[in-house]
Image (cartoon, rainbow, N blue to C red; front, side):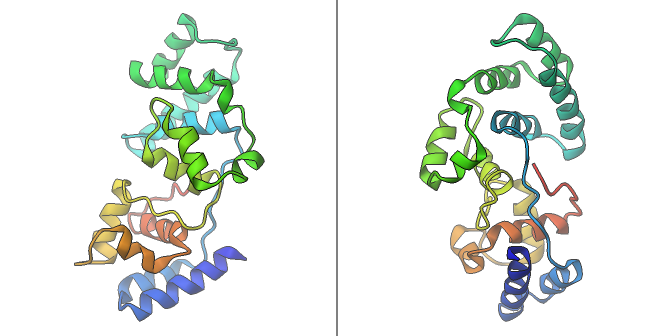
Length: 202
């Protein structure tokens, strides 16, 4: 199993590099699984938009309300009524516009199986041109939708904060995290756990 292989690799690597506290953290937790989304792609993207820039607890509450709106009869194009319901769910007008642009975009009617056949560059090109989607969102899609085992999200504030705890005095850079390839996604899970963040799926 990939997660067990990642656990053994990261435990050995952190010990060899001298990160003994983080090594004990990994060993205490044991193998972690990447909990990938089973939602349709567009719905998954909307969830990520809802999770941006606010606390996990608040974002989760907003997402539940937004999901209920999307699961109702919303029609085939944006509407004043839909916008009203989305705003009442706790979203800003800007995020409502982003969601409309994503949810009603036929180009994003694409299956996970089809996405998994695309290269990393093709996935990034498809997503980055959508308003409201930036590099962080692309990373979350690769990690929690496509189950890419080697994603390090340098733009994630939680990862940055956890890095300062796990790897004190080390550069926060792609070069540093290259040492943990090909299992950076699993490293992210263990880093988030340092912050006691149990929300291991987006």
